[in-house]
Image 1 (cartoon, rainbow, N blue to C red):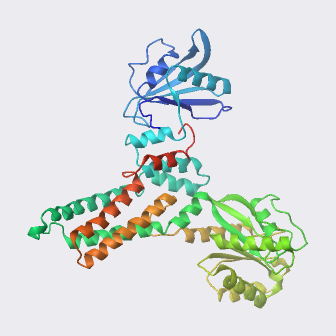
Image 2: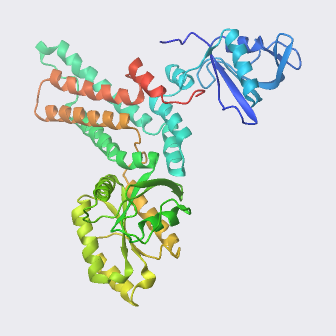
Image 3: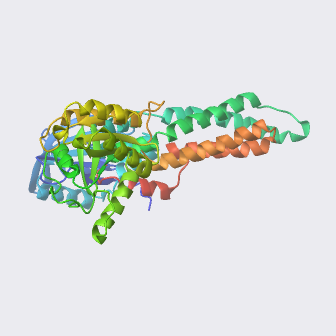
Length: 466
């Protein structure tokens, strides 16, 4: 149900904080506040300018509720583009609920999740990419995710998409004009220029779509699977990374029967570490389920830490790692090998092990003793290096949203078909249809083309008050 003519209100903070803010937006926002709020200087707030801050009291008739600060914002210079007011009150549950009760009694309606930001989008204060970035900014748990959200909030790739869409619109208008003069066989659109533009649109869309895998990992936490045989020290390694006893450690092989997950921030990047069951052939039905789950986690991980034991010797370790790469990864993977229990290795073996592993591929190798808590700094440094490779792309912008990713794929496909039609010398109407499709999907990303159903789905995931 659309209710853009109504004035909405909502707490911005949960009760229990020292200060809580209650936000209102709508044509009656300031007058509603004026009916329950009395400034210290006793003046009316209805005629005041925006960006005014007032100290005063909230009362319910003769009953005093709280001393508050009220901030006023006038349309269109506000977050939502409407008249807005914010009440900063003390953070008790009673005070917050009482003020909300007064505001609703005076005509405001309780806001739904994301309703303030949805109004900001509807009123042209931000496009849909920027609106979604607001939710990502709130949810960001590490510097990398925060940086991506800020880039999108500031315009990110929205401006670039706007330029491409505008250029396509101009050229497709000329194409469609040709249809009105089909009998005269006139050409208004420069085919060479249009082909260059469709190729540029396709190239840009493809380059952004490629970043989705890394962007999604950064947003939700880079999944790192810790793999290896039973009893090589995977759980000890996880506990050492997290600095807590998260996983059970035992001398008995096969102790870890299920995957254990936890998150940890290293150098501004959120990692989701997954301690998997030891991989081996087993007749134990429960352990075999754990092994199957371990294989699933490894196949879905962005980074894989393979743990082996230093005392095994160079040839054995090379064979073990080689078999793991061939049997388990089978894809372009970011692998880190940890040679654990390196304190038990024969003198001089470290160099030979590193040399033999270098023949298998270009991946970092860390020698350490997980139990003795040695060389965790080297492990974290190697993870950082792998993460940088994972996030490398030719673009300043990284796509983190599956909706954007799906639209980018459709943009690329439509632009590709338009380019093929141009190269094949097909008629203007067939070219125009594909260009229109590309324009449509570009508009879907930024919200120039959308539906209430899509908007409802997007903003329902926001927190109330935003």
